[in-house]
Image 1 (tube, rainbow, N blue to C red):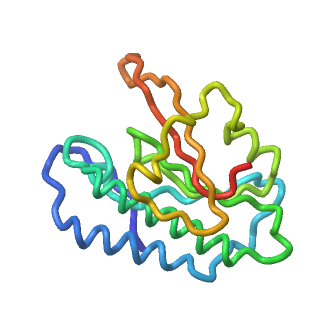
Image 2: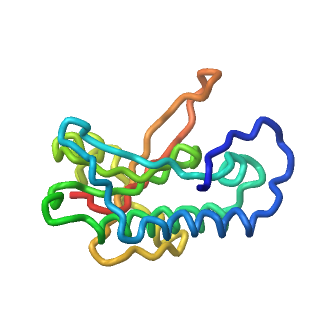
Length: 174
């Protein structure tokens, strides 16, 4: 199983092709898979991006690597969506790509529609991005039925300094 790991140094990331191949294998493991233990009380279930921190963040992370990681997350969400049983049709499946903090990206299954709508901004939200598309910019392939919505907001780093951040939602967004 591919694991998430924090990098505690600035050493060069080694074996990038092998790491991306492992991520693609992780994504393909979701083919035919839908968790059978989800309940309405849980509200959601998620999987974080299973990569080394420095693969997607910091000075060594390239747009090409981030693009590949985002595509594999979208593919995994699509596999889960295709495997969704009839009795779970109200569940919403979404990939969240966070920038510049891509290590916090995840795939979510929302079992509660109100909870889903509370996390994903409405299209008329003041923070909703309509001036650009990450899918177009990065050349991401969105399977049929998957939509995109972007959110821009101001966050604070660990020193309290503000910076611009984005969250991109791919999947079942209203």
